[in-house]
Image 1 (cartoon, rainbow, N blue to C red):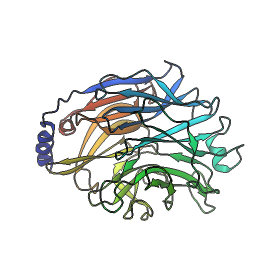
Image 2: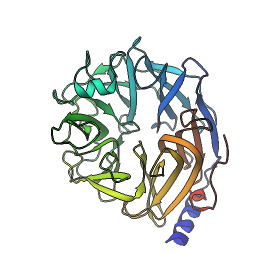
Image 3: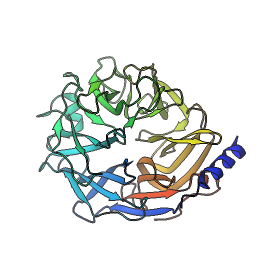
Length: 381
């Protein structure tokens, strides 16, 4: 399989498009207008621009957090200066999860909000002053300007405590009866008196938000439980959706679930033992057709303990097996987001550093054939 995959990818990269690798630090701890930067998200617009989002933080996961954006119109080689999509004073505006409606060109950006004085453990335990709420805004000019974020009703159960979109990206279904549907992955905490996780008597679950009318209305799927959150979704070849999730079930790998009805309902949680991970966020992406089939890629810090060894894995059989892998960066690393650039490179926006795993948010792109070459992609910052 490996030899045939290499042939397919070499053929793919020889399509006549000029592919130039990128390696750019977009945000660095201690520099710019914020002390810390976390939670990367990157998406390709209908016009071919790359939009990179993150949280600009003064401290950790709580407090004053702003939603930031940088744009690239040359496949990630250069980037615009930072703009602020959402700043609500001392409150928390985070968890970016954009989705592009390629039928209208509109870019939807889902986010979540809570009081800056509330911490996740208190929101989960329902002892906080407020709760965590989903918000959305949009851009009709390729990410240059954004509407005012507004809360989204009907996509959070009143009994849930914590709520988070993504983080990462959403998708638009391209095949089958649900073609055109916008699907945004999300997660939540819920009452679980019999739970055995670190959050008992509360549990973690995942779900998706979806729209069939180009964002005029949004609906919530059946929950996926138990013990999973920080989810990403991709569409398989036959139109089935695959949800890939952070797991709290003691399996040291990713949790997965599938949907055959466009994301409305989901199968029982299973675990992909080949996607090794200590509890962390990850990214999964349908790169698209190549000679050997449809290429899917997955990225995460591929270790059972700690956060390091950012790795990309490849699948040619609907994510059933992961036949090849590429070490991107062997140092400390954490959250990531994958994208296919306009010139057919694989792009990855990820947290990494030499001093700590949140030192920088770095964008790297490369031709897909690099996955099958020996040695790490990057050797140093």
